[in-house]
Length: 305
Image 1: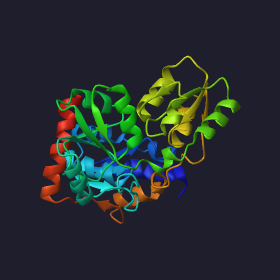
Image 2: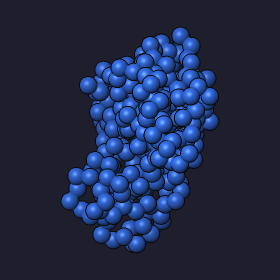
Image 3: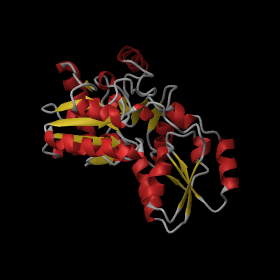
């Protein structure tokens, strides 16, 4: 099959099988073109609850498919490639967090959504990169243990100075790989470009940005801005997607290190094999994980409204 032929067959099969395809924005352009919806992990999970299809293929990484299943327990949810994990989501397990909570007994535990479903059972509330500031500000407790990303947590702490934050070492290996020197070189090479950065980057990198925000926020800013050139300080697939969406503008990667190998695992063939019943992994979670992680995620929904 050619790319176009496989895409056409996927489009036919998903209707026949009553399956919705959700693709994270870090997926390839070829995958995005067969998806019913694209967006960030939380947005996709919410969208899954709104669609009529009884099955969902999540093109992304494991914690995203878990979140989708937790918010849609009555639907069948498949992870497009069973090897697609998230290093940051795997940096802490539930036992480690239980020990950490003993050091901070009067702190509210705020988990970035980029965590496993099992870890969420030990947390009080989840946040996304776009909702973290508002949710942390809304919490009654003025002491917050923010896991697992100290870069995003530090960015939030700067926006909510009236509260006390505690962190643990960790973070996204891809965003953390971008150095201040990378940012300086990129800005020197493209002096007219606005620098748009994800808050998972190091603080010395975000300090140089013209805009700091979630992946969705970065894309919205670039599309609506009157500027013509942009340096994109998040996963490099966003450079390609913006080139398609705004062909009249110029987009440049900050560093080749901003390429997530886990996000790149999913192929059109993976989706095709799920639809033909020959591949993929259906997400199955225990009742205790569904209940515990669900409490944490629903609290995010309540505070985020």
